[in-house]
Length: 113
Length: 113
Image (tube, rainbow over all chains, first blue to last red; front, side):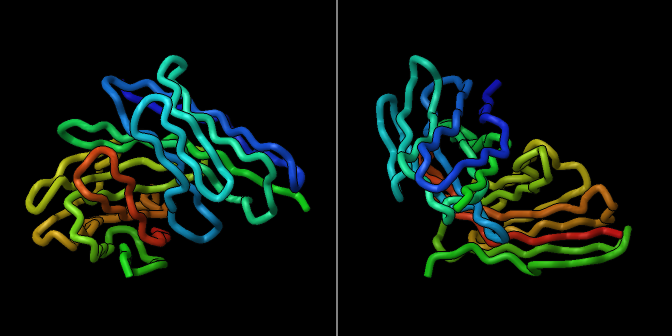
């Protein structure tokens, strides 16, 4: 079946470090891929998306590239800030009859000043 | 302002006392969904609705009911709440297309004693 697997957290980094959060997926067809971010006490917000192979989504310094050959959508940022501390969710959405959205379990990120 | 509004934000109640969590969106979205978020389990879908009068079970529907009589509203009903339904609940909506991200409410924290 369709699924999303993310690296388990928590991930702890110092400010200005390079960030990678791994995400791989299994899906039939050609899903759209998303990264959402959840700040403490809030709901999920869309961070970036990609809808087809080799697309790169980017926002707020974060990037992720839709890699169909490796079924991956890893999230990267060159220099993290304390304000990036949050939980990050990778997700896919099937573009078929039920449009079901499948989330990874989330990765908690702590950035130390 | 485009938003998904959930009420209440917090509720403490007792086993067996029926409760309803309301969800309303002002974006004319076809697709609406309920999730619960639990530590270590990420987001799990409870029910979803593709349009008015069309609802379907997600991954963890037991103990919950929903209705979609109007496009904007998608209430979650717990007919006889139990302690294992203590959780953080999120409502979300999106256009029907598989490429579109979901918009999330701010969450409802339910405690069932």
